[in-house]
Length: 121
Image (cartoon, rainbow, N blue to C red; front, top):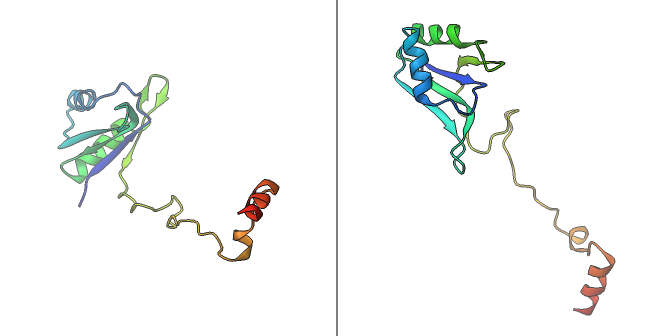
């Protein structure tokens, strides 16, 4: 069973070391901390995951940080949800490739220029 906390609404400057310091100052324990970053820019996406060693520690972290103020915003802390399978939409339906209808309608030119070009070819 996983005891992972989602910590959101973080300023982009927050690092795993910052979160570790906050936890230590509250006598809270984490097995691992991962700040999620944009893979291209390496800038924080504003959220992190904290792995707690057990259910009690996870709940203590959530109680301490959920709705805690930081730079005029309220942090969000709650149990992390399992990742959605790739291609899954927020409403639970799978993303599908849009298939065009084959047949005469899709073969017709889209403009007068395209129609003239099709005749010439």
